[in-house]
Image (tube, rainbow, N blue to C red; front, side, top):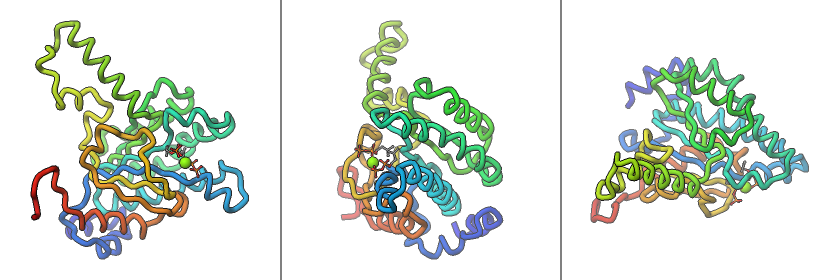
Length: 260
Ligand code: IPE
Ligand code: IPE
Ligand code: MG
């Protein structure tokens, strides 16, 4: 790991600093998922409009993606917009939908330099054209990159994802491509939007809310959870490293007696 961080120092100049604050370089979480919450309250505290909080939250995404890359995390999934967030005022939804374009355009050179691959989970077809195009372009441009996978959960809802997987499985069974006896946990995994990704090892939620809000209900079955009162725009390297350190001190037993 030390070697890896040294060799990456051209791209991540904070590598050594980051490495020093790790408890143990060997048991890093491969996949970190974050419910980025608290943008609205961050803005409210400053008497600013909610969208100012979302703009600031976007800067945090940039910073945390860099650190995740420097540390050597393999997948960073960021919950950016839920299937329930359409309930918000039209102007706020419109702003949130403009963020991928804004973010991906300005961050693209660095994403390429860092060898980061952009991915998304969620109902892409339900997104406005501009948002969809921005995501598609970023996914296409970065598809051969082999470093960190920066996976945005956009118009994502875990229940909708499970419903779709069930329907797709039923179609395969009806077509005779799959028999009922062969439907097991592995089959369900293959039909979820996360089929190509490992399950999250660590889930972080900011802003003091202690709930999942329809996020990765199936995939989080054995994930370690870490909650903080810090609002997403204030989330920084220290908080991120604190979460990783907490993870490294956990004893993952998966129902067994490992580590006893
Ligand atoms: C998270 O911040 C961003 C999205 C859900 C899109 P919020 O907008 O939920 O901020 P709060 O929870 O109102 O503070
Ligand atoms: C969860 O946050 C969704 C995202 C972070 C994108 P919300 O702010 O929408 O969740 P609730 O409404 O507080 O449960
Ligand atoms: Mg919220």
